[in-house]
Image (tube, rainbow, N blue to C red; front, side):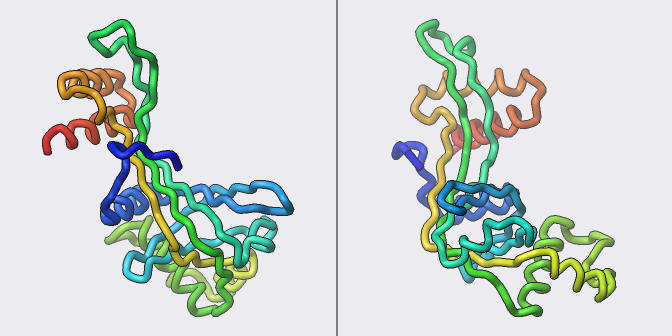
Length: 203
């Protein structure tokens, strides 16, 4: 990913946080000689530096993906930035956004207990604490049928890179003005970008 130095996320903590807050990723690999992408939820284990996920068995990406270096892309907050929000009429449109790229070799998981553990952790992460739902309440027959229909995998992380482009290269007054205009649109995503921009200004 092209990352100018003023947009680079240098702290792993911030990259991990971006991944955890935006876990619905795109997994890229080469499949039958062409680029292939699957949209899917992934879970990161910070301590072991591993991504976990599963893919539908009929999706052939896993067949030649095993052992291949793959790329998982996590998209965070993003918004269109209009040049009309600047004090100058000599600017052009742009897009503010944050994203993380994670690389590693895809490993297919075979152990039934390890697969179940990864599924439980994924469900728990997105259900949240205090949820009334748990995989424990699903019958063993149903779970076995589920496991037959998927291929679980892990991706030990070889490297990560993060980018947060929130107008850092513009003067503070302009950045505050853009954040204010983003809040006026009423769009949730725009408000989140405004929040990210304002947080940067407060430090």
